[in-house]
Amino acid sequence: MSINASGMVLEREAENEVQPMIETDTVAHERESETMIEGSSEAPKIKKHRGPTKKTDIHARTLEERTPIILNCYGQPIGAMQKDVKDLSCFLGTIARTTEFAPLNYVDWPSVPTHDQIWEYVLEKFMIPPEGRSWVLETVNLSWRGYKSKLKKMYLEAVEKGSNLDELYELVPEDELKDLIKQSKKNKRNREKLDDMHIMGPSSYAALHHKLKQEDPNKQEPSKAKVYRESRIRNP
Image 1 (cartoon, rainbow, N blue to C red):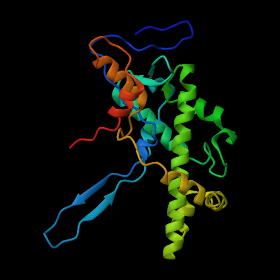
Image 2 (image 1 turned 60 degrees about the horizontal axis):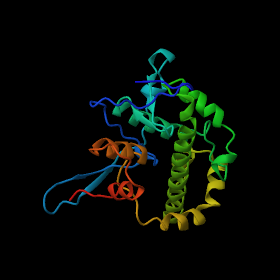
Image 3 (image 1 turned 90 degrees about the vertical axis):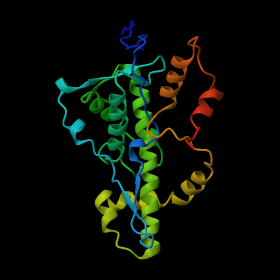
Image 4 (image 1 turned 180 degrees about the vertical axis):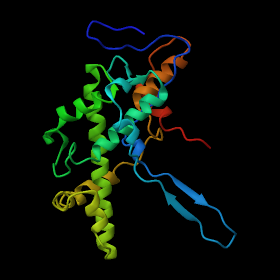
């Protein structure tokens, strides 16, 4: 492990380096996993959904318990341990769902006034070089946008079915929810345009790029086309 003049931790070249995985998306840590319960041939299949990740253990960390994060030359997490990078991604998702850090009644992320507050809180739970600030805030941004979209969908479904909205108001203040609904139709149209999603889950393009480079016999940088193709290869 080496440190440059600006204090950035650079990726290690050791052969036994752990290959990390990170998301952006988002919102990985926020996707619902479905488990099919198999009964008799006549019994219906029931879907169970996992709730949002809370990461209470990370929120309870002290300064002495912080985990170090290694960045690549682009300021994106790649290590030191695969679990640490995934934990960071999921932890940032919980911040995006906390209205004190990421209020939902702002139209876009640049107008949210809590960027410094978010960065300072993340540094209380992880040891991240200053070069990682942009990636951290952008990851919270993506999760924040995904959470807003999910809330609006839940609201529209509840209204259509005539269901009680008390459950939604427990998640988000009523005034913020009303502001979200104003943009629901526009966001829905934009979402429908995405027809070629990656299948990396909580991993990021940065981690996949690093993995492909390590797998190359000559340690050459993979092309953008190769990274794109690899991110969409599905298991049979």
